[in-house]
Image 1 (cartoon, rainbow, N blue to C red):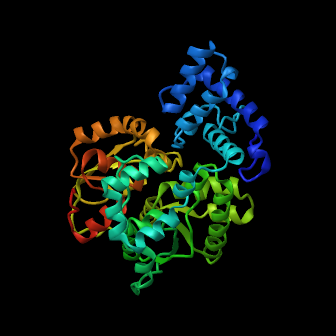
Image 2 (cartoon, one colour):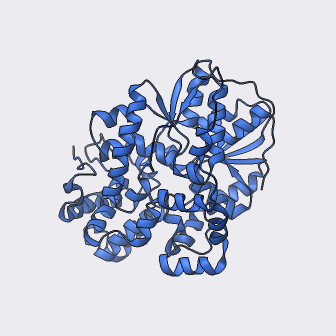
Length: 425
């Protein structure tokens, strides 16, 4: 079976090897076409092969190949959709191929300033959370947003995340209840968006876990590295992976599971770290990583989840993010919210077209909106009382398009415990 080199190895960014692999995979895709219209990248690839090269996938020129890579926004949905992924002897891994192309480009051309900035959410978060009122004002100021678009190409129409007080500072001031620990212990990999933009998600996760007798620790951690990896900055992603594996590894060795409230980060820890930083230590950490809802459903199956709810949630529309679906663990947040009395949950599986920082960029803004269109129309038709999504960037896209607040499922669960209604705006 054909195998790809590890992400951190020099062979991963060998231009000649990349070109051979692109021609091989593109030829298979042109013959299969199962992913046509799945995303802009496949549509462009297959139309170009047909209309410009008479079906010859090897005839794509450098500009056309670059466009294929640029239009891939990393949803990874083609992987479970493809019939030829490993262990098939053809071993087609289109998302890994696109990552390899971006890494090879970055090695040859360097990482663009915009991608360096967007690939370092910790720096942005520290600056924004230090002066959140000023940062949020700047993100809404038309003149400053025009300047941001002109200099960095971040579309002025795109709603940007709000900054607030850091979750980790809140957590350090808390005193856990006496019963925390009777049903297990977890290390919360709270994610960069929770740390700087959505501390309320971390607070809700902590309270929900405590309520079911689970002790919560927050080991030292940095960004999972996916934004850097998306930009082809393998060294930046590898540096973050080493840090997180070292610190999460200590928690795992102490018997803790790793619980993650963000699907991109849980997928990174589970799927990409073993390819980025292969070894026993990485595998040990990856094997103990759980999506937050997945862990809570596991608690329920063991009879340990508190199901004494104080209220209902009504009609809930649950958006299942791409990076959660590709982990193939089922719709655990749906299953969790259906435990709440007098609550119905409808699953919406379409992509929002945000996927990391791709949807922030000026040249992809319109395409991102078009990808999200069917999902937005489906939510409008459903008219739910509450919209939830595990992905903060998917929530950002939906809030911009519809004007209705989008919550994390754990926020909804915590509100149901307390008998609160979450405001729609």
